[in-house]
Image (cartoon, helix red, strand yellow):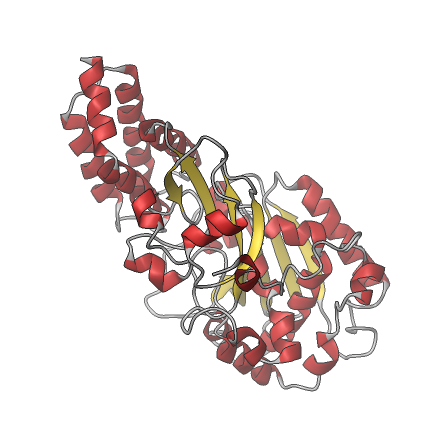
Amino acid sequence: MAANDMIIKIVSKNFDIPDSHKLDVALKNGRYTSIEKLFTMAPEDVTEEVCKSGLRGKGGGGAACGPKWKLMPPVDERPRYLIVNGDESEPGTFKDRQIFQYDPHLLIEGIICSCYAIGAHDAYIYIRGEYKWFIDRLNEAIDEAYAAGIIGDKIMGKHDFRVDITVHRGGGAYICGEKSALIESLEGKRGHPRLKPHGKECEWFYDMPATVNNVETIASVPNIVENGYESYTKYGTEKAPGTMLFAMSGPVKNPGVYELQYGCKMADVINEIGGGMQDGLKLKAVIPGGASCPILTAADVEKAYLDYESMWDIGSTLGTGGMMIIPEGVSMVDVAKNLIEFYHHESCGQCTPCREGTGWIDKILRELIEGVAKEDDIETLLDVCDTMNGKTICVFAPAVKDIIKSIVEKYKHEFLELIENKL
């Protein structure tokens, strides 16, 4: 597939326009044009349109957005909340910040549409604490929107629907990207994930109904409202319609963030859009969707397509779409050690298998690199990974298991060679 067929600019349409973050420029380039149509629709019709679009969450899980909105209970006297997850802390992921930087008014427009659909009047945007510069830019856009009467007591100064937006700066904990830990943090408590309910239900913020969506997911809503679900489903695949902001980092010629339709062949994206590997380098592996996704070998990459189902079929996940490119010559033991240091540090410590397992893996990999490990330690690594899987409150430990186990299994010879050379 040619680059022009892969790149579809919906969310990123205004990214290349000078000063696109400013309200006057945003208004000249289509921002807030969905609002007039929005208020001709009933809230449930907006939700139904999003359901028909097949819009999926773009923060890693890929859950359908519209059905999640439908989990909100019937409107009653209780306040309801929209919580926007901007805690972009997954290594290799840097797409949501493009929206903060280049088109924050698109996010605000998406919040208005989403709040109307679920009956919420207060929205919180939770952003990782290290994003100070992006937080300032977003707050400037929100201030502009208030000053222009776009948000506040009346939308666009005339529609009798209140929307207030608050930006909350996180304290730098990776685990707060998990939605229940995010809510705990937002409530002023330690960011520990919550036990999951037995059945499907909405989230709860101070025991009030709430919906949590990723930044890019919310930014995708205005196009669906204004142009109908067909404008979204004409791209992508049957089960993963639409587009996503995909990132490429590592030694490709054109690293960056590109909005692509789902279903593109990964090798084509790397070679046609990424420009291929830098001169003199050869592809060895790709971590396809942020650091916690099972690794793909160069042979796997040739079979990989950028949609959720295809990635599951080859034993990995699409995640956040952050492709981390690894060249030949890089030690996969070093890659595993680099990753586990991060996850060992970021485990919240609530669950024993995660708290102790990440530390145990870190210790074994350190001993491998220092030359004091033995062959049995490789099997111990795999055993610890299995012990971490499915025995914790959140998916942190299973995700760590996925990436570490996949590296050990696919590049076991490198681990064995390291032990043999050190003996």
